[in-house]
Every structure is written in structure tokens, then in C-alpha cells.
Amino acid sequence: ERIYPSHGNPIAMVEKIQQMSPAEADTFASQGLLGDYPNTYTFTKSLAEQLLVARRGDVPIAIVRPSIVIGAWKTPMPGWTDVMSSAGAIYVAGGLGLLKVLPGSIETKSDLVPVDYVVSILAAAAASQSLKRGTYRIFHATSSVVQPTTWIDSM
Image (cartoon, rainbow, N blue to C red; front, side):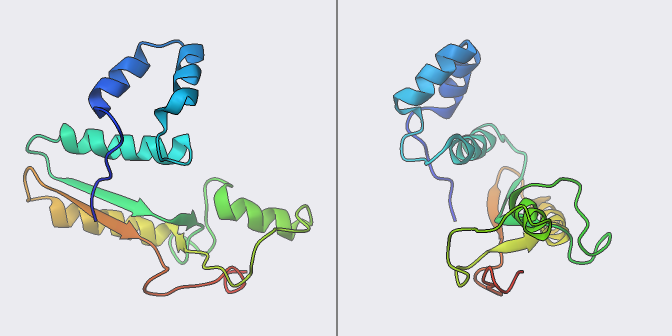
């Protein structure tokens, strides 16, 4: 895997945005700032990765890219979460009867990964990079390749 570059120099772009008012930043964003990125979430994740790599010096970097993070599988207890968002919010809304219909196919891969798995991958990634000064490596915390599940499987 690799770092996907955005258009322009990421360091200069961040410095430019930091000097703007919120209204100027909104205008700047609406005038093609995102390029091929579908939204500010994916754009800023990419920008953060680019900045980490550009400014790492001799510090080893481990970048972990999780898919959709859900409640814990086992640790600290099954189902544990500290925030209700993403897929967890969909499950709660459905369970409470607030969500009657969710458009899509039940056979679509859900690519959900429990938070305790992500934490384990973070620790392993940090350990594996800890002595590799000046390098970076990208790790994926996903389920779709090794143990794919569909939305119906995860319900």
C-alpha cells in the first residue's frame, strides 16, 4: 500500500488553510480543494498521512487504516463502545424501531471490524515499526479479505 498524494503541497495547503477565516475556507473547499476525494473526511485523512510522512524525520511511522469500527468482540466486554456512531448507530436505531428501512443489499460486504481488533493491530503495528527509524508502513484493519461478512451476517 502507499500514500495517495493530493494535488499540491500538503504542508503549504495546511498553512494556507490555517490563515483563512471559516468563510474563506468554505469557499476554498467548494472551489475544487477536494480534487478526486469524495468528501472532506477522506481528503483530510489523506492530507494527515502525507504530512506525517513528510515530517517524520527519523521517527518510525505506522499508519493504520481501519474500515468501519464497531463495538468490541471480547475486550473489555462483548459489545462495549464509548460512542454511538457509524454502524453502531444503525444497529441501535433499528433495535429501537426508529429505523424501518435502510436502502441497500443485505448481501453487500459490510467490512466491520471490532474495536478490540483495531487496538490489537495498532499495538502490533507500533511494535513492528518501533526500531525502523525514518521509515513508514501502512497497515489495514479490515475484515473483507480474510473473513468477509455481509450486512445480513452482521445483524
